[in-house]
Length: 220
Image 1: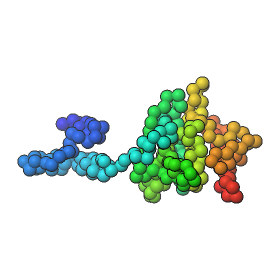
Image 2 (image 1 turned 135 degrees about the vertical axis):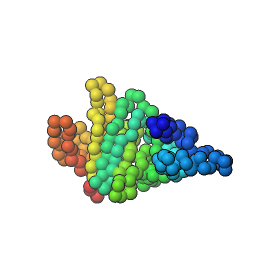
Image 3 (image 1 turned 90 degrees about the vertical axis):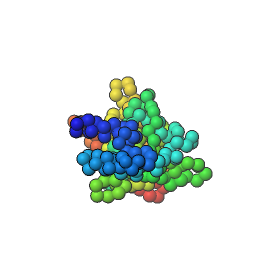
Image 4 (image 1 turned 180 degrees about the vertical axis):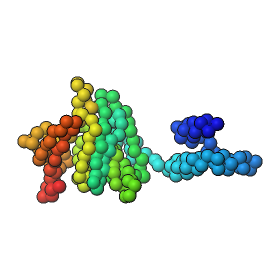
C-alpha cells in the first residue's frame, strides 16, 4: 500500500501534480478524506506547496522570444557559479540540439548592449546554495551563437572558476565549442573581452587552465 502511494506521488510530480492535488474547489464531503491522506503521507504537503509556488508563476517569456531562439539550442544544461563560482559545463553534442529554456524569475540578466535588442538575454539561471542565494548559475555550454554572451556573463558575474565536465570532441563528435584559446600564444576576444591562457596543467583525468580576462583598461 505504501509503495503504491509513493508511486502515486512520483507520478503526481511527473504529470503536473494532477492525481493527488486538487485542481478545482474541493467538495466538503471529500475534505476529511483529503486531510487524512495528507496526515498519512506528509510528503503530499511538500509536493502541493511546491506546485502552488511554481505553477503558472514561472514563465519563460524571455527565453521563448523569437530573437532568443538561437541562444537556447542545447541538448542539456550545464553549471555556472558565481562567488567561488563555477560553470559546470556538461555540454552535449552540437549535432543533436534541442531547446532547454530557463525561467524568467531567476534568469541571469546581462547588461544590455547599446542599440542591440534582447542583448540582456543569456540562457542561464541563478541557483541558491544551502547558505547563500544566487550562489551558482546554471547555463548552457557555449555555441558559436552564445560564446560572446557566455564570456559577458563570466565577466559581469565575476565567476572565478569554470568546471567543464565534457570534452570538446568525442572522437569525431563535437561535444562542446572550445570557448578558450587553443594555446598560450594565442588570445581570443569575445564581446570586447580578451581571453588568454596563462597556465595549463594536465593531470590524469582533467586539465587545469588559468585564464586572464581583460576588458579595455580593466583586468580580471
